Length: 512
Image (cartoon, rainbow, N blue to C red; front, side, top):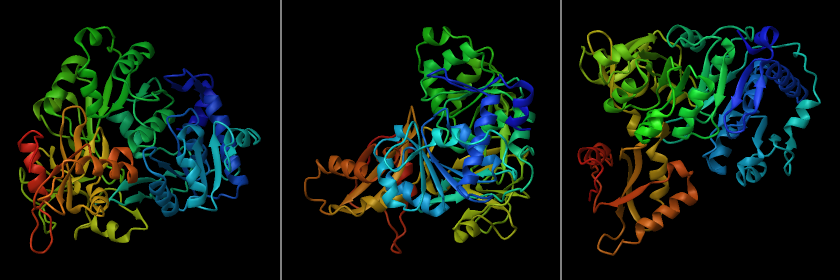
């Protein structure tokens, strides 16, 4: 299934609606514009297997570009709008992008890119901007007919590693027809009940793996996507009522913010149309999920997976209520919990989470990282720690190398630590996630000052400013604490677990 097929049978149906502006793009328009985009890419010399990059807010042109790349056999790299110019530069160079499409709404960052990554073909949505050509004008000049050599392209999304450097997840292209079904589309139908009648609410940034992939799966099925330009809890409820939304994908922070609305506000909106509210990306506190099921009914579904796509667990509300805290049973790949030697452990024994007989993992330009994700049995892991019960339900107890998940966004401490240690007044630094009622976790930097005896009352503000000047906003610490000496082994290994556990044991209270 594919949008072009729905354009033939229900061309005037809305493929997606922008929640804020109300702009509607029909299947006929999506088909025509994605054809024009594919024609534009071919006119620029791009062939199957080449790469384009998209840096854009939740914009009505986003899907038109993604589907144009998909039907031209291209990889489309969706770049986070939260990154700095230098961080964006790294991804553009690493993925080998030949075309860079952005939006004039992105602000000053896009003015830095041409000099940082010379040789890119540059386009902007919203009009020409400096060296950026007007994407919509260039596309409009192209024919609306399909290119002669259509083949299925794919997203190529970046998932940060333990070193903090993002890793590109580059799947092999199928070289098959553009309307061939994929595993996610089939799971959307079989597990979550998505169909051509679905009205899907997308409250998150489209550059993230889950929003992008779920929305495009709905397009494959012929449903309608409601795209929120920015999440607001009451607005989300109003949209569910207005459009009679049947399904959506959320992160626990969305649930928390909706639950924190006054009871009279929540009661104003009819959410009875919801048939499947899917959540993932971060652990959902048991009380939060209990409240959501009590409010919306047994329509809350959870899954555990990664951008890498090596496995997939899921659980519905009924099974969760009898296995509280579980992220479900494996439906893609076979779940294995292994010890430090990579061998299976008995039920209810904690270990590293692996998937056997699932899709391969391949990190672009990172053979060492690819190799690290496999054990001697050929099973793959994302580095998460957990245990499984006798029925095969997975319970996660830790996260990849102390990765911080704040509001559903993955944040990796090493990159932040590497920056902070360069400050002249810092002797050592550790970055951990501490409890946060709203975001799940918040970034906390624990600093060993170079001169402990000196007054460092102003150092926290100085380091905050230093971090914000060199890192994207989401990575910058929300709080800085001090310790006289960080707990390190004589070999230099940092016992970060001791620091992190102190915050969680004390509910996020100050340490040191």
